[in-house]
Amino acid sequence: MASELMWPQDQRSSASDEAIRCKYVTKNTQLGDGCFSVVKECMNVQTQERYAMKLISRKTVKGKLWLIQREVKLLKEVSSRIRELESSGNQCLDSFEGHHHVLQLFDYFETPQNIVLVSQLCDHGDLYEKIIEAGSLDLSKQVKPYTACLLSAIHFLHSNGVMHRDVKAENVIFRLRITELDEFARRGSNYDYMSHDLVLADFGLATKLDSSDDELKECVGTISYLAPEVVKCRGISRLAPSDSKKIKPYGALIDVWALGVLTYFMMTGYMPFDCDTDDETRKCISEGDYYVEDALREDEALKNSCFWNFVHLCFTVDSGERPSAHELRKHPFVQEFFHSDDESKPLADKIALRKTFSSSSIHKLGTPSRSSTFSNLAHLGHIDLTTNQTGGSRDQELSRIRETLKKTLSMASITSPRIGSMSKARQNKENSTFRLEPLPPSSSLMNGSFSLTPECTSNFTTSPNISNNPSSNDLSRLMSAPESSGTAVTGQSTTPNTDLLSGGDKGSYFRNAGARFDL
Ligand SMILES: Nc1ncnc2c1ncn2[C@@H]1O[C@H](COP(=O)(O)OP(=O)(O)OP(=O)(O)O)[C@@H](O)[C@H]1O
Image 1 (cartoon, helix red, strand yellow):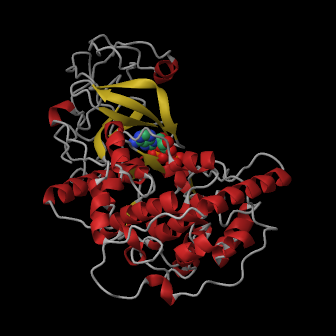
Image 2 (image 1 turned 90 degrees about the horizontal axis):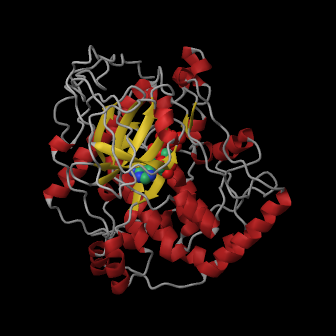
Image 3 (image 1 turned 30 degrees about the vertical axis):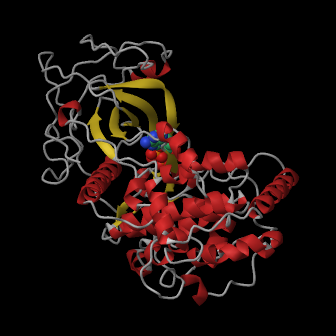
């Protein structure tokens, strides 16, 4: 368990403190929210570039600030690695480059009410919405490329020593370059071009692969997506030290399990392990007992695509036997999106699909509700297992499943040309709508400074007029204000708080918060 670091104190001393203009205005409307945060669109008033601003309420994370410190530290490292890879000019022959699909952090600062993270704007919805709206996704056009893209993102994280720990549909968001959309459509594509716009977000639970054993035994994540080795860690804080020692720390392959759950969810519209009660769900996860509808098991398109084999491998209960993200790139289900220069056997040949599957009697086959991340960390003091609530009766759920199955089967019967060749993969990459966001000039960043009232509102339609009149720093009032003010209001700030986000370790990642934050 990470130790609580001392959070910097508000160092405002007098009204004579130097005024620093906040460099962002936000929209009133939310892009989304989570357990700890509200996310809004914002604009840097100097560069006019738009970003997503995650406002993490200090109140909510009181006593747990190390969690945010960990998130920012990881995002900063990952963002810097992304730039390094981009500038190296290395040619990647895969259709997707993992580092293109991981959320980038651009700026961070603090306010009296919030810790604020500024990241790339992904305002085209999330994967959860997409699956729910469609009932299920198309096997060739969506499920395969989305899975391949996420696999490349997970592989990038793992090869850089990071595990995400909360891979789920709600944390996959879409960025889209509208201007390139027409161009892409003109060139034509065998699969949904939006797969190039997937971004894996929410690093709130991410941690390093070489973290302490305590950290790698935290039972955190989202119940439907938990791997068996994470389920084993449940209640560990209540165990005697001799018993907790017996539990093995888990590793990066928990993300591979979660990817299997997500792939299954994309294909079927429901969750593989969800049951009516969380205890039943955990039991099914521990036994690798996932639900397979008879009609889907026999479906030729699914069989031919090796879909079942892929998810089955992800659902290998023994993590020692589960393939890594690197190995799964050779699986026939996604292989066409990855360049391979060796002739080794495809992964799927080595595994026989299991014969027995749980009956539907305990499995919950309805549309899953948006799931909440939870943690059983004692010091988090926050356990949210309100996942998997579905409205309506069992009959309604079943009729919905039948509809979903019909849709799935008809979609699966559409055959798309295979993409196979390397040159095609190259072409796919050229078609990518991804462009690395330009690094903002450091003078336009907050660089970790303290700002009294940065939650200024604007509809972005009028040029933000920077004022030195301090607005109210009452966030709740600002949040509820009607979205009409074209004027950005900025407040005063103190001199940069040199302790910002540094916690007890000033020499590490946030030394000199007022200094340039190099990505
Ligand atoms: N960069 C972004 N661009 C657009 N929307 C975003 C962005 N980041 C997050 N969101 C939206 O805000 C929601 C909450 O963000 P995030 O998951 O990072 O917050 P959280 O408080 O850590 O949530 P959780 O409860 O899942 O831990 C996301 O589900 C997404 O809809």
